[in-house]
Amino acid sequence: MELKAFLTPLAIAAGVSFLLTLVIGRYVLAELRKLKAGQEIRKDGPAWHAGKAGTPTMGGIMFIIGSGVTVFILGWNQMLNGVFAHLYVYLFALIFGLIGFVDDYRKVRQHQNEGLTAKQKFLLQLLAAVVFLSLMRYEGLLTNLLYVPFLNVSIEINWIMYLIFAAFVIVGCVNAVNLTDGIDGQATGVTFVVMAFFTAAAALWRLTPLALFPAALAGGLAAFFLYNHHPAKVFMGDTGSLFLGGAVAALGFAMDMPLILIPVGIIYIAETMSDIIQVAYFKATHGKRFFKMAPLHHHLELSGWSEAKLVTVFSGVTLLFCILAWLGIQGRY
Image 1 (cartoon, helix red, strand yellow):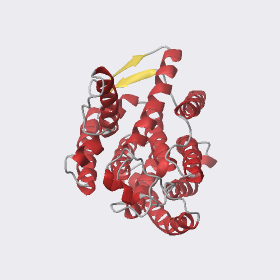
Image 2 (spheres, one colour; image 1 turned 90 degrees about the vertical axis):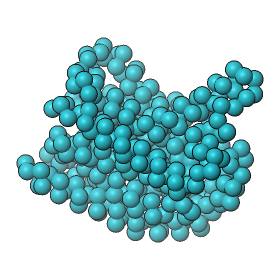
Image 3 (spheres, rainbow, N blue to C red; image 1 turned 60 degrees about the horizontal axis):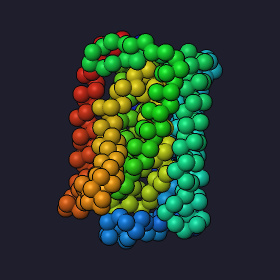
Image 4 (cartoon, helix red, strand yellow; image 1 turned 30 degrees about the vertical axis):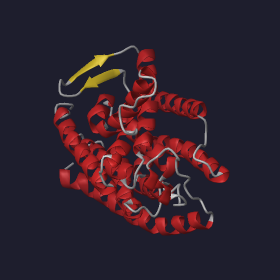
């Protein structure tokens, strides 16, 4: 298949998802406002975030529906031929989105910033990861060969050890993306770049089914950004951020290169590590703080960075590391 013939359906998928999400977003936003599904703001966050209280949340529904309809319709012929890889990845991300929806709904209903407990989230996410990995293995879409980018070698790992490793990587990735969603447009912009990378990687290897999903989600995120950039008209909520985390993790494993999540997810990792360092340092020093506030984006906000600058820089850093990752996988096939 010529590259042009391969890329055209992906461009169509991105365009269709963009338009669907843009149109769906108008109705979703109106409904969220009617339901008074406003975000409760953390009291320990930056003081100026208090002005965001009441902004509709659960806006991730927009790109979840937009990308889902696109994947289902444009992937219909592939499913008729018994190819379901794109659907598996979408459904896996959707399960995490549903976990996030339950969390968001409880927050909105109880008018507080806490929904499901950390234990409840962890167990639900771990269960979803195990089911997904088992399904991918059953379908022959997952191997126990751990591909190492740049070195272009694969290391065989015991299946049980690999599944344990994979499950915890997925849960960690999902929560890292969730943590990155702290300011207007940030998780949207960063994950758009990551989806563009996975689309390009799938195009490089002619993995048509898998390429369809990240292409559609990239289009959906581009449309959602129009609602979510500063000052945000709507937040994606845990509904959106957990869906995105599931999508990022699932694509890493579905393409059989989970270690690539390290460079492409550099911002997710930095945000998570800043939180871990802050807590560890606070406990070790009996009350001192390493950062002005964690996670990292709040520290930079308190250092004078605007939300627009943060989104631009974090998305730019992600782009640079995705280019690096691209160079690291050139010998994959």
